[in-house]
Amino acid sequence: MSVLNRAVKSTRKLVAEEIDKKLIVIETREKASLWRGKKLISNAQWEVWKKKQDFQHKLLEFIPEDYVEIPFVFPTRDEKLQQTRSEWYKDYDDFLEYKKSAAFGESKCRQCILHPWSSYCNESLRELILMGTNCDFPCKVLNMFECPYKQGDKDSNQILLFLKDAWQVISDALSYANNLSRYHDYTYEVDFEHGKVVSYSDIRLGGYATGDLRELEDMELSKILMRGITDIYHVLSNSKALEIILEQYFKHVEKLENKGECSDARFESKFLREFKEPLIEHFASIKDKIKIEKLLNFEGKNLEEEKEDKKKQEETEKWLAKNEPKCNFDAVRSAKCVQCRKFSNIHCINCDIWVCVDHWRKHGQDSHSMD
Image (cartoon, rainbow, N blue to C red; front, side, top):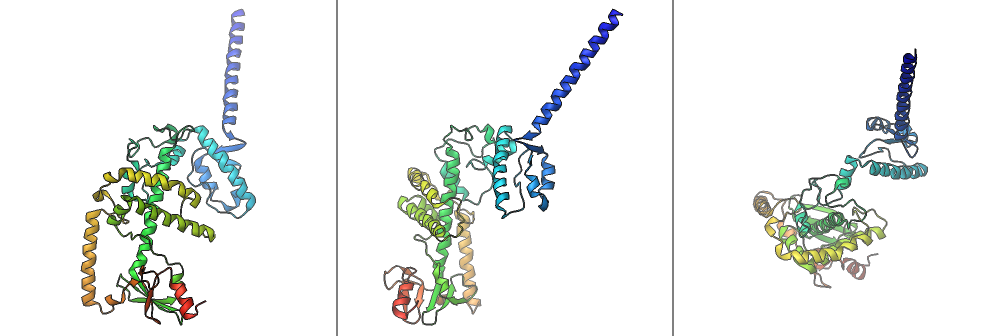
């Protein structure tokens, strides 16, 4: 009997210990299923719920158990909901940081210049920006939590993240100059007395376009022509030219900000200027290493491909001149501004003089009583 009693007691003890273990597991799971009072749910469940428009407030009581690229699909003007979402984002980011989510780590890696994902930035500039870093591109560790260069650490100098931003700034500045350079391909015949404008394009495919003086309001010419690889090479290898191109872009962003208009720049103008001196100094230090044959133009083509495109364009123009009556090569003209002697493509048909983008308004006011 004593043996049986001992066996029963032993069995009861084992059962009790097993029950305790299960209770501990259940309690641990319950705690693990919450983060700062918000219940963790599967990503699949979150994707279903976030598409329910009437569930947007209730949704903030939950957190996906891993990284979701776009947590919310419905924008809101509800200030209370906006504030709650802002607080929710902080909790969510902290949770992913605590969990060290690999997917979240990869998304943070996209802020680094070594991340291989495709970008609208000029790819040939990335190699130039990376000169002197001794870093391998592309990075093989696409997880900021395991970064071999410690870019996610609080004590890191975050140099590779800064270089990604610098790459974007120089690409944006060159692209903006390229956009402005297209105005050089137009001639504007202006009737100031009647407020009419006729513009002719150097593309020579569509004849002409008509409008009014508002067409000249926002027109600006690039201080340095930026059409292709030769122009890019000139700017990158000449500190003064690079400074002009950067300042031109910075002032454009400042102008939009002052007018209260939305800018497509990723940085405010006050932060953009932090990149000016580092970029000028960097390109000055590597100017002898810049190879024109390794640069890409604004369409992602190299020097040989660009030359081939230009050759085809010239052949097309010859064909148009011979076969298309609407093509008026003589209509596209330019001269020097009567006031400052700089490039001008604005022709006053009333006075038969040329004025530039900086002086057309003054001419209209002084000579034609323009408001």
